[in-house]
Image: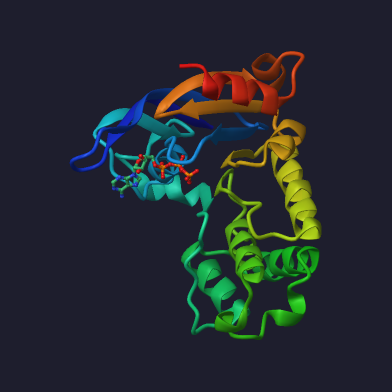
Amino acid sequence: MLTIKHFTKSYKGGKKAVDDLSLVVERGDIYGFIGHNGAGKTTTIRAVVGVLDFEEGEIEIDGISIKKDPVACKANIAYIPDNPDLYDHLTGIQYLNFIGDLFRVSKANRERLIQKYSDAFQLTANLGDMISSYSHGMKQKLAIISALIHEPKLLVLDEPFVGLDPKAAHTLKTIMAELCSSGGAIFFSTHVLDTAEKICNKIAIIKAGQLIAHGSTEEVKGKNSLEEVFMELIDND
Ligand SMILES: Nc1ncnc2c1ncn2[C@@H]1O[C@H](COP(=O)(O)OP(=O)(O)OP(=O)(O)O)[C@@H](O)[C@H]1O
């Protein structure tokens, strides 16, 4: 579903933010991407979803290069950034319809999916309100719903649990599991290690731009907790 081969990215004037990173996300995977602040998670994620240029390496979605055919790739991806920038002057429902138009979602599917996900996130009553009146968590929920209405094969999320209340976090976990059991895949960054340990079948740990562990959650953590393994790997130079 997602193949990253030797991805390397340097920002202007800086050292390598990500150095020779390779990993594969397969259909059905909930793949957690963890690392300390500044490790290179957002850089990798932004390159995967085609909003950040890169010179070295290759990224493919379902065998299609994100560099060569970004439009075809983006049709299959939904991306929720860590701080979604929504249009404040629209209402929630106007925004969802705007995204639905962009991805050419049929009227029937759009209505069904908006209903399903806004009910699940308890946002239905607020869809007629201006986004400018939403709390941070409500904006986060709207961004998640907008990502789901075009039924992406690959859902890419940057820190999705930040700002969500416990019920919304639980709803998101359920939706993530649903998407993967119906043949989709998820690649997401998080600092919430116990959630990653519980819901991910695969984990990658990045440190200072380099992948220092990746594989099935059992392989990566062994008999320890993910937090213990993470602390040990991050502290060892
Ligand atoms: N636009 C930019 N210009 C220059 N350097 C950048 C830019 N964006 C990120 N960096 C640098 O690249 C490195 C990786 O940053 P990145 O945002 O990918 O980390 P992260 O793992 O997502 O961190 P966090 O957990 O804090 O969100 C850091 O050293 C950061 O300072």
